[in-house]
Image 1 (spheres, rainbow, N blue to C red):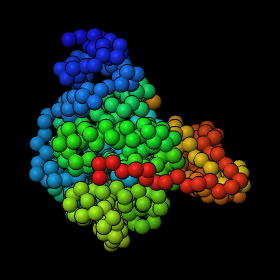
Image 2: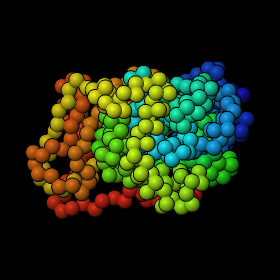
Image 3: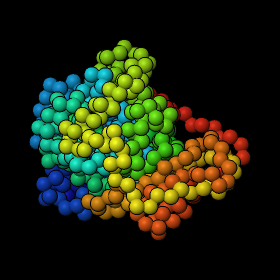
Image 4: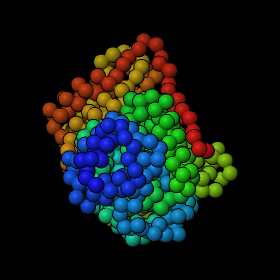
Length: 435
Ligand code: URA
C-alpha cells in the first residue's frame, strides 16, 4: 500500500477501508509516512469528509496507535470530559476537580491549543514544573493519588492523535467533523474512561459555526460511543463569545482558580455546573443531573474542589503553592487596558477574532512544535448585553512588548459590534444529546 494512492483515493472521494486507514495511521506514527503526505491526507479528508464507518475505523486506529495500556480498575470507573475547542474555555480546570471532589475519579487526556482555540495542556503548563507528558504508569499513579489526572498523549497513549493534532493545527485542517470526532474519541478510549461528557461548542469561537454543524458533530460522537461501548453525553454549548473573561494560558488558570474559590465569572461557573452534573449522573452518584448542582456548589464552597486541584498539581510535579498564590503564575511584561471607544451596549464579540489575536500575541503556534508564551492574553471586562460608557475599561491586554500590544488592541477592537439597545443574551446551553 502506498501513501500516495491512499491520498489520491480520498481526494477523489473514495471510502477507505479499515486496513487502509490503519496502514496510514501506523505509517504516520512510525515515520514511514512523511508529514507532508499526512498533511495532504488530512486535507483530502477535510475536503471529502468520511463516512461513519471510516470515522470509527480512524478512531480505533488512533486509539490503538500506542502501547495498548490496560486502563486499570480505577480508570475504567473514571469519568472524562472533553471540549471540541473554544476561546477562553477553561471549564476542564473547574469541572475535573469538582467532580473528583465528589468522589468520582477523573482521568482526562487533553490536547494543546489548536488553531484559534486554547488547549488544556498549554494552560496547565503555565503552572511552574507541572508535567503533562505522563507515561501510562504515571497516569495511573496520579489518578490513584489525587483522584484526578490530566495528561497529554504520550508514546504510550494514542500517539497518533498527538501527531495528527499538531499537523492539523498548522495546515488549516482543524474544522473537520470526522477529524475532530476521531481525535476526541481516540483520546477517550486510550485513557480508558467508559463514561464521558463532551462539550460541543457552537458559534464564532468554535470550529462548528452553526447549530446544525455542532449537532451533527455531537450526534456522531454519541453514535460512536454506542458503537464503541462508551456512554457519551454531548452538551452543545454556546461559543458565540469567549467563555468567562480571561483568554490566554496563565490568565485562564488564574480564572479557573478564582472560580473554584467562588469568585469566577457566572457563565463559566454555570457551564461547569451543567457539565459536572451530567458527569455525576453518568457516574451514578445522583439519579438526575439537576440533583448534582447543590452538591457541586457545596464542594466548591467548602474548598474541597480547590484542594483536589492542588493535589493533582502536586502529583504532576507542579508548584502547588500557585493554588493559594496565583501571583506565582508567570506574568507578561506589559499589562495595560483599552478604553471603550463607544457608549452603548455590546451586541456581539467575535470569539474567533479574540482567539486569533491572543494566539498572535504568542499564546498559540504558527508552526508545529513552536514554543508558546504562557503569560500573554486578554481579560475582557464586558460581555454581550453589557452597557459601557466611552472611556470605561473594555479589556486589558497582557503582551510581551508595545508593538504586540498595539496590534492586539486593533484586532480586538474589531471583534466588537455595538448597539444602542440591549442585545439579547445567547443561551449558554443549546441542547443535550445522549442524556
Ligand atoms: N479537541 C480535540 O481533542 N481534538 C480536536 O480535533 C478538537 C478539539
